[in-house]
Length: 263
Image 1 (tube, rainbow, N blue to C red):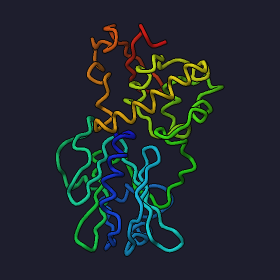
Image 2: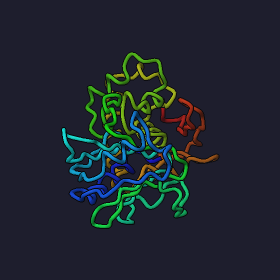
Image 3: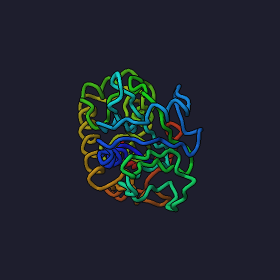
C-alpha cells in the first residue's frame, strides 16, 4: 500500500495543482529526497514553475512542469504509508498499513503555491520519496494498460513464482501484494506457480482479470477493497467455494490463496 488504485486517485487529486505557480518547495526531512538530486537542487528547481500535467506510471506519480527544456519532472513515490493532500483534501482517506493520525512531522514534502494553497506528501514511515526527473525506463509497462503480448513477455521463460513476477516493478509496474493475491484468486492461478508455465488460455485469463480487477478497485476506492481481502486471516475462507485459504510466503510476501480452485 498504496498500490496502483491509490496512486491513480492521487493523480486525479493532483490535477487540482495544475496551472498554479510554485512559490517554494519545502522538505520536512532531507532523507525523503531520492535519486541523484540534492535537497537544495530539488527545491531550487521547483521555485517559480507550474505543474502542467499529472500522470502515473505504475505506483510512480509524475508531475510535469513548464520549466525550461521541458522540465523538471517531479516524481513522487508513496511507499507503504504515503498519502497525497492538495489544499488539505485527501483522495484516499485510509491506508490499511498506515496511521490515521494527523501529525505535521509526517509532512515530508510540501509545495506551497503562490495562491496560498499547498500540496503535501504525508508519510509516517518515510518509505516513499521525491525525485527530480525520475528514470521511468526502469519500470515495466503500466499494469492498467499492459497489452496481452506485453504481459506474456513479462512472464514467459521464467522459473520465478508467478506472484513475485507480477510484483516485479521492472517487469510490470503497479501491482503490489494485495492486488496480486486478488488477481490470481480471480484468475484461478496459484501464486507459487512458475511464471513460464502458463498456457495461452491462462495468459489470456490472467490478462483479462488483471485489467478488470484494477478498474474495479479504482472504482471502489482502493486496493484493500477486493473480494478476497476480508478473508485474508487465519481461518478465512475462499469467497468462491468456501475452502479454507492457505497462507504462504511467495516472493518474500505473505500470500493468501485457495488450494481448491487456484492451480
